[in-house]
Length: 235
Image 1: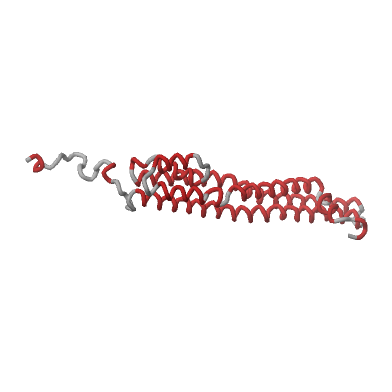
Image 2: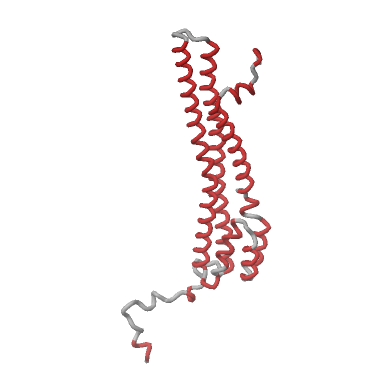
C-alpha cells in the first residue's frame, strides 16, 4: 500500500491489544478445526476394514472372536460392536440396548469436543465488539483533547482500532461456527451409520428377528403376580 503502511501493519498492529488476543484465538480456532476434522471422519470412526471383518464373523456367530477384534479397535464402530457382542448371551434386545448406550456416550463425548468451536465462534464477535467500543471511545477523547477539531491522523488511528477488531472478530467467528455445524452433522451421521451397521449385523446373527431369543427372558406374560399355574396342567 501507499504511504508506507502495509496490510500486515493494519491487521496485526492496527487492532491494538485486543487485536493480538483475536489473532491468538484465530490460530487456536484453525488448529482445533484441523484436529477435529482429522479425528471425526468416516475412515476413523466407521472403518471399512473392521466392518468387513465383522460381516464375516458376526453372522456366522463367531461372537467371541468378533468381540475381541472389536475391543482392539478404538473406533466408534468398534466400541459399539464390542458393547453389543458382550451381551450376546442375553439376546437381541440386550445387544441393541448396549449398542445404543455406547453410541450415545461416544457421540456426547465428541460433541463436547466440538462445542469449543461454538464457544470460540461466540467469543470472537464479542471481543471484536469490545475493540470497536474501545476504538470509538478513543476517537471521542481525541476530539475532546483537540478542542473539537482533532488531528485527522490521530482520529483515524482510533477509528482504525474499532474497524480492525471488528474484522478480526468476524474472522474468528465465521470459520469456527461453520466448522461447528459441519462437524456436528458429521457426528450425527457417522453415529447413525455405525448403529445401522451394528443392528444389521446382530440381526443377521440372531436370525433377523426383532427379538430372536425370547426364551432367554423370564416369561413374565405367562405367570402374573398373584396367579398360580393352571390347575388343569397338574392332571
